[in-house]
Length: 473
Image 1 (cartoon, helix red, strand yellow):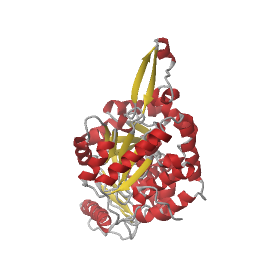
Image 2: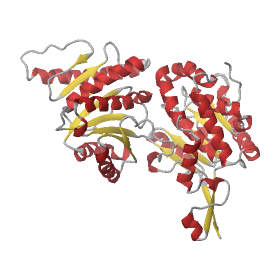
Image 3: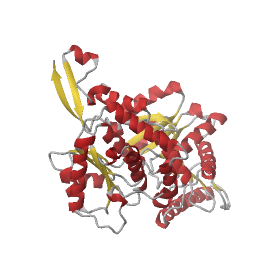
Image 4: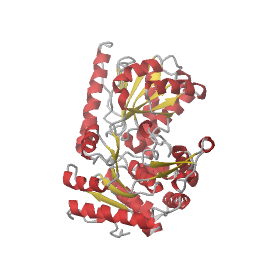
């Protein structure tokens, strides 16, 4: 299927991107928004997005098939990983969920259409109307596609024209989603623009920022700081910088059966989008005193990752990323061998899928003949950031308080903690995590699948986009 050239991102790679071209595109989508989008009913937009999502979930959908055909070469994700990620994202875009996000963040789902209020405000003689920016500029991250798709959905719900600056090597899925919306309703497609240009193209970005009423950005802390300084004072800026996550497994979940099931859930989090998102676990802390020791849980996690690799291969990495994993592996293997040598008169390091040392300092489990997955168990409970792409640490702890003590150097960067505990402990530990400052707590197995209405970095998704008008009756 050949895509029509609806967006700047559809132009051939050699096409020159200039400040004037970007400025004119921003003006055009704002003009189209005023004609075709600004006065649309919220329910119509909700149903449009939900119908588009329903089509994407169908195996025969033309845009889904094209995504599975083109995205692996561009993104490096395997087709099974992409299919799983698309299913997780589009399953959330139901009429009920979309309306729920509006009601959650704005207090009343009608507030994008008319002055409205929940009962306590009505009794106080107050109503309010929420309105989105004329033009939102999205600076999309290059690691995961679903963050860009979410930004586009939220922007559409608040009736904003949108200009998405896609990262190089990460434009296929946002483009295809925009095309799928335009396929359903061409006028909606006319309110969206997408483009790709290399990082550091300051004049081009400044031309976009000059037209935008709101700029959203995801990336490194340095990227966010740089963009923040260049946003006009009249414009709103919503930035999300570097974040990471970790898991915690309670001792009560470490029976032979539940330990294996919990390890499978942790493996689902590690393999989702190849662990590249800010919601993916770098470390899984395992509570001591369970029937299964923490290093035993690490072995179960290794087996679960090996099974996942068979069903959902990671995909081919660039040479430098594979070399980084191989180098990190070798460091831990040497530590494991050195520790074993201090306890045994002679140690032979076995070749193959599983390399491990006696219980204690370090053990390593790794995929044979590839860098597809790696599990490192360390008795040292200090938090270690992973090199990602299915490389995860398992560390022991006495309880959650000790895990938080060791994770404290990363406190300001923690996004999500996945809990593998009984339902009875969930509320207690979630309260402890909230007071420590964690924005999101969820069960293991769902770390990379936040609900549509989750508060990214603890902030309301739609609430940050809108401006309010209050009416005192």
